[in-house]
Image (cartoon, rainbow, N blue to C red; front, top):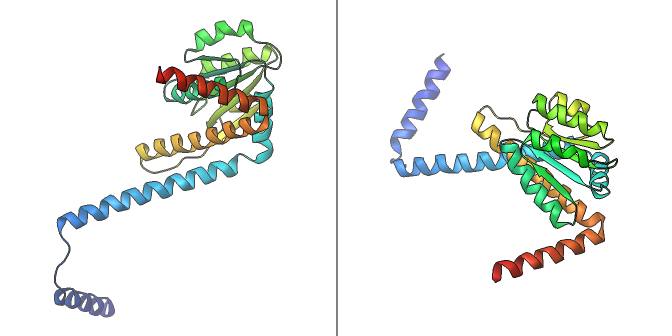
Length: 220
């Protein structure tokens, strides 16, 4: 106790000898920098953990399934639907015949068009929605392959999928954890898209053609 008291007194004296240079604005700036740096580091850590949780062999298997599919069905609800829609658009730019729905009932109706070798990409953060699992089982009954995209948790959708991409995102603050999930998911999808571009030269050429068409359309 005496040692702690002496240290405290010494720190107080040293602080009293120095002029106060910190202003409220500086304090706000420090908090700003702390939050910015903390979020950046958390995103980098989540993306790195996600990368490690999806080994090369699994990712390359999924790329092969998607590249060789006659049709790619894509489904996701809510926030997952936003990523599903954007990824479905990217697949279309590669020349893949893509069927996208944000409604499981409409997706179920489209399963009549599913054929052996087709692929269903099912986006669901927690993988627990019964209707999505039902669509997946029906798709597999048509001899299609289901690829789930969920958190790295035990969940029904992932358990019954033919292949799975998993996302890592953990933070005590719920709003930050959601941002980490979105960031890690986007990073993983971007890498899968790049692999698809490199895996098939015809896809890469079709992407260039489609981007040029879109460019001309936007300029007209």
